[in-house]
Image (cartoon, rainbow, N blue to C red):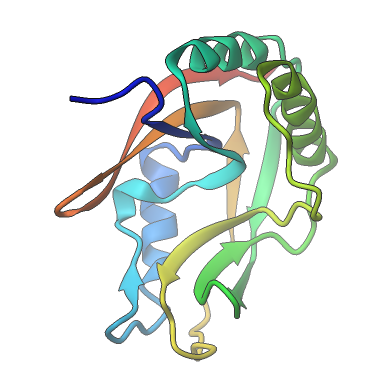
Length: 176
């Protein structure tokens, strides 16, 4: 039986089917050898705020706070690849972060403070994780840069299972 604090959640940009296909194709340009593992195509996303485990009443409060965010639609140019050494992940990102994305991240973080959430203090580095447990900096192949038309953000539940992590979109919030 699940207890009251076992909802593990995060807010993210969630690609539509076409964009997800483009991201998956770019992901395949990165060589992955065991024990590294590629993020499944259906889990590709760009995190805005990772929340972690919450109580159900805290979830309801966060959903309400997210609905109060008034941010603009924007375009996100996915045009670079990278590697984070400490968590050992390969990623895709943008060489220039649009002001509208910075604003969405900031507004959402401020709004979520009313739900007993403390945003991270480190600089926001938007990226799409492609593979985890990479041993060293992978030799990248080139990929075709892509433009992501962002018109919403989502609240996602993360559940661990025997076959890996499953993400389920709980709520969607439209941008103006």
